[in-house]
Length: 364
Image 1 (tube, rainbow, N blue to C red):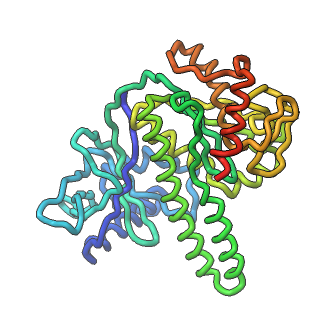
Image 2 (image 1 turned 90 degrees about the vertical axis):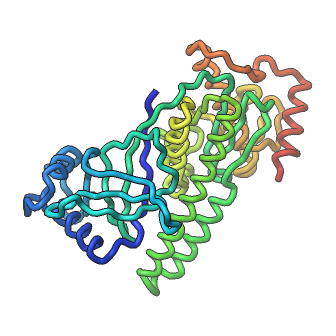
Image 3 (image 1 turned 120 degrees about the vertical axis):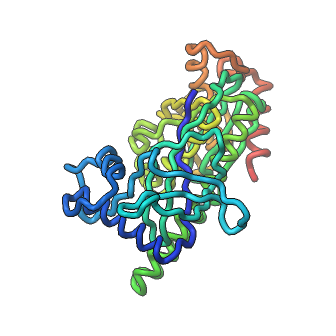
């Protein structure tokens, strides 16, 4: 099975001449798609035509310099510790193009097949966004790892492989967002440039945190040979989801979609399957008895007025509902998985066990 991904490579400290050539080529590329200039390497013209719809061009937008895969090369750098690889970038009217040093965020392997890529301008310099494809072994899952995304905890997971013991990720993300929102508010009237600086710093911190969270979840799924089940974020703000307008506001400030995207593409790289199930009413339904006669005394806690479940972790309750809903998918797909206790088979002793989990192991 083929998987594809993009490796971000920072073009590090090119000489003044090479930087000027990159700027000129990027400028020519943007001029070409707007019909202003034709001074561009012919293969690059083809790549620009392939990836940019000229009838939908945004006038103020700077488009990347697209590169056809047979027009550039990447080679490992030898005898230097300053950078990891060289990349040859085609430049119009420069025979052989230019070689620039690059630092990728992860190793470029021999088995990676390089596809069409692009050079992107950022405020701090140029990046080569290297598109690659590679073979992965498709998964035959034996377990299910269910993920519930929430405000207090970015991701709560529960798996059929660990007897329902939860893992909670990203407790600090909400605090980070609140801290930087406070800083931006204080700086709003003093310095717009400082506000942007603070916002950029926040984005980098959150991005790094999400990468760590998604990486840990993928490692767990891989170790447990588990299919990943995500709550479907479509219609997240609708009232009938059980999360309502409040979550609609939270969804705009918490990076749920970005984390979902990271989990999905990192799972694909490992051959791990990802499915989505409806989150409708998952936050207000008791995972143990299926009742919707429930209360949320706090954002973190969940009570059921039918079966008596009290002070249970709300994130874990949502994750278990998603886990139970995924069983129907697995049965229909013909996959053999370790089955958790379903609501119909839970006994009084199981209820007491759930209370212990809800009141002790999750209070921290």
